Length: 172
Image (cartoon, rainbow, N blue to C red; front, top):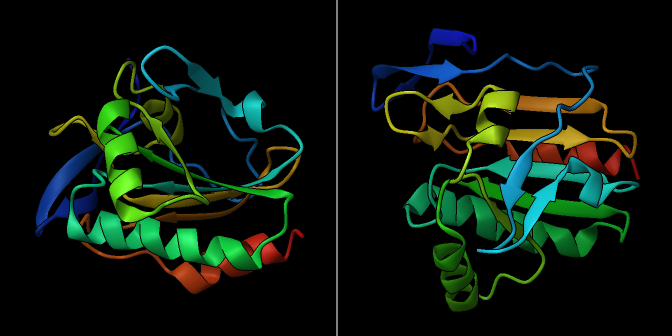
């Protein structure tokens, strides 16, 4: 059974349980299997040789998640071709594609953790009570070493965009 962490995060002030380990800067990034669309899967190795900013959101159809994804989409213009921005949520691939099309998102790759919650469990962000992934940010270098981590303490809070982008730029 996967490790459970209680009392490290809240949803509107109520404690929630996160499943999986708490990763730290310097750790090797765990692999995962996630959906690109209904038929295709992706894993960490699909982005080999790239600096990765992984933006985790509970659902693109909420205000904070929408704003977070739009912000990283706009930040992508100032980053090199060596950087890939992945937004991971439990939203179905159909919903992600619809949302991206309606929102004009072109610089962020959306991936769905809905089938196996492989990413959520591996990165310690799977919320036991809701089967959603907790808002968080991970920056990985080209060798998949984690250089920056932000686990949000409250699900409805926004991440530190400047710190995440600065962490990416320091690797470019």
